[in-house]
Image (tube, rainbow, N blue to C red; front, side):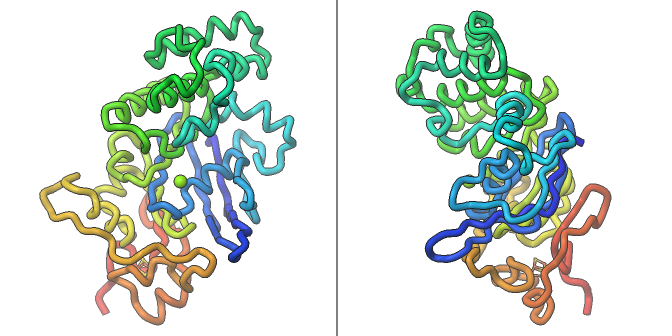
Amino acid sequence: MLLEVRNLSVYYYTLSGVVKGAEGVSFNVEEGEWITFVGESGSGKSTVAHAVMNLVPSPGKVVSGEVIFEGKDILKLSKEELRQIRGKEMTMVFQDPMTSLDPLRTIGDQMIEAMTVHGVPEDEARERAKELLQRVNLPPDRLDYYPHQLSGGQRQRVSIAIAMAFRPKLLIADEPTTALDVIVQDSIMDLLDEMKAEGTSIYFVTHDISLAVERSDRIAVMYAGKLVELGTVEQIVENPLHPYTKALIEAVPDLWSERPVKAIPGYPPDLRNPPKGCRFHPRCPLAKAGICDAEEPELREVERYHFVACHFPGGAKDE
Ligand code: SF4
Ligand code: MG
């Protein structure tokens, strides 16, 4: 096992109250797999991804849990220990590459620095930077460009080239294609697939379950700060057991059948004051009064590799 996340909770201490961004989240990532986290915005999927890198932005705080990466708890490492792991063993690609690229420095300077900080000599780093640009289908002269001289898709290629520099064990990609058009999207996904083929585990975050299906090994579904279902792609697509997962699939147009598209009624809850019991109960067509609004369902393994947090997985039982 590459990564083990146990009972992770992250809160944001805002002026208007404590937002429980993620609560009691546990899962593993295996070596060389592609796991995708899906959920609406505010479901906690980015929060958990940032916590895995120990990069939760202020005013967020990890209030409990462990993130064991190759035997070490990432949340307990010193700045220096983290510096050695980040960018080399585990790395992250963001929705907007401008958040990780420095607008005032050339692509080449930034690529070279990403390698020299880990001890690669400068001339070797320069050579490798050129090769990496080729790998992501950018001409080597882009080394002399500034980020604003590239398109959004080209900037994302540069971030992936930087991520590829050391063949990391884990790549976390948080909505890396959301801002891009469909064709560019696909070429970015292809690059992630190539990294996977070379042994990198891909931890992909998206609000779009249809993007998750084609390339993932497993899918994790988050709702209102909780992990509500986790399973192989086949299990999630063919036999979704959580009503929210079913709703997400039914909200995708023409994905697996001719059936009509159904929007999910209602809105995600306010995470300063999440609903009691199951957080999905105000929107759930199967909610049972006295149970669903009272007791919080735990994530349980209901068949091999298939976990769900629902009192009535797969639908209400006969009364
Ligand atoms: Fe719906 Fe109840 Fe299951 Fe929650 S626990 S998803 S409210 S059936
Ligand atoms: Mg997000």
